[in-house]
Amino acid sequence: MDADQAESIGVAALAFLAEDLQRLGRFLALTGMGPGELRAEAHSPRVLAAVLDHLLRDESLLLVFSAGHGVAPELIAPAQALLERQAGTGGSA
Image 1 (cartoon, rainbow, N blue to C red):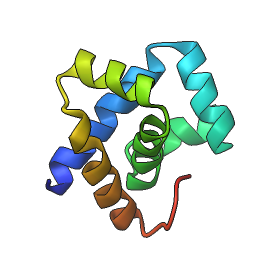
Image 2 (image 1 turned 135 degrees about the vertical axis):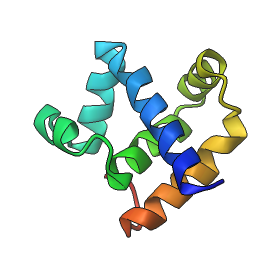
Image 3 (image 1 turned 30 degrees about the vertical axis):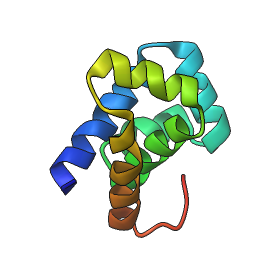
C-alpha cells in the first residue's frame, strides 16, 4: 500500500458516501464534521482516513463499497492506517 493507492481508495470511498444523502448525513453526524468542512478538506489525509474508518465500523457498508468499486475489503484498513499516519492523528475526524 502506498500513499497514492490509499488516497485513491479514500477518494472513491468519499464519492461512495456522497452518492447517497443518507449515507453522507450519517457520516457527517458521527464525525461532527459539517458540509463546508468536508468540501474544504475533502482530499486531506485526515478526512479520507475518517471516511475509511467510517466504512471499517460498518461491515455491511464496507462490503457494499468494496463490491461496487472493485476494492478488496482487506485493503481498507491498511489504507486508513496510512492516511491516518499522514494526517498525524491518533483517531478519526
